[in-house]
Image (cartoon, rainbow, N blue to C red; front, side, top):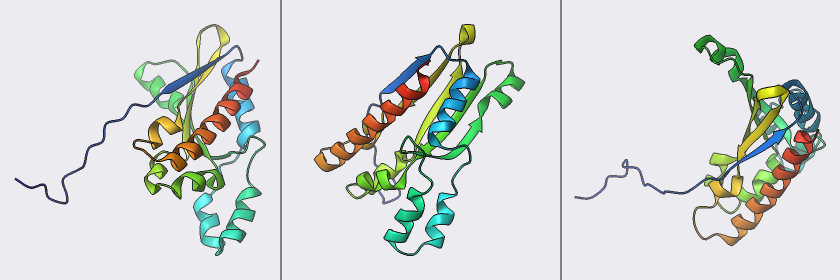
Length: 170
């Protein structure tokens, strides 16, 4: 029996989740992150439509990058809706990225775009503490031998870990 082109190909891989605990309270952690990536989501698709050349796009994108090297794309407040189900915790899912970093990976494998931009989860913890959790990008993007992709993804890992350390520091 042959597989049709609509049958999915399966690749098993293992992601690595990192959790950075913080003695800061949830509001302070959120504020620290937004100070690093920007307080307003960047309409990145609009920028792509408005700027025709890579050079003009790159210049415009750079103007939106926060001090961390990343920009804010989206936020979902899980805490608002999980409360309705009886879970009284503040939880914020945040999507951050930078197309100028993403292209260093996508040029070696466009399917790395499944995990770029990256997602963070900020959680309220017990005793006024908080945490920032994410999955290491290279553990998701590099699923076969591809040294250039591995190098670019590892560079993103380093940048993301530096951001996580900075915003979770008390």
